Length: 295
Image (cartoon, rainbow, N blue to C red; front, side, top):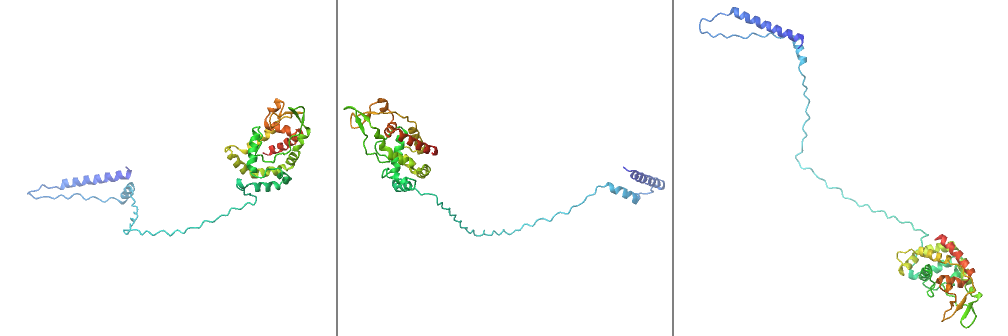
């Protein structure tokens, strides 16, 4: 408590004491039964300085204005219908037509397409004279599949067979020898094949690749790549070795056979290369090597 407060309290106490003393001196005993009403001493008003001293000690309370309550509408809200959705037509995007895309025919009707494509290749017209007349894609696929296994089919070839029989010389009634002119029967076939443009031929092969794969699936190879089989066939030819003549032959029946068992037991494709001769074999291998590098 401050010093001013203590002074005020002491002053009030002194005044109260003096009042009591005064009433005690002036008090007279009542003679009857008269009731005496004693007035309480009047309190002296506090000095202004004292009031000012007490007022700052009281906490000040500020009343903040309260916001007015939000009035809630009693009427039900009006729900407007959504605007009608107008469909926007989708723009039709026309895919550009690639002029370089070639539409392949069906496999059954592919001969004309194949022949026209070969005719456009360098020396392709000469090659057409040597090829089979129909089902060229299917026959080529069967031929390649046989070569990949070292076999050489006697029928269903994709090219026309050489009609001239193998020239031979008799050694006796049961033994023959292949004449040197026997290899010349295949010169035209080999020369025509190696004269075609390798790049153009490989590009045309790529164009026909779906047809080759379809024909390959027809003979039971649905999950095998025909490209891989063609590579295997070419590799089989390239791995053959030259066998020096003269080549003695026997004819136990209609067909001539090699008298040397080591030659007769070779793969059929190897024996066919012996028939066309070493020079034609070298030309053929060189051309096939070019194709193999592009596969």
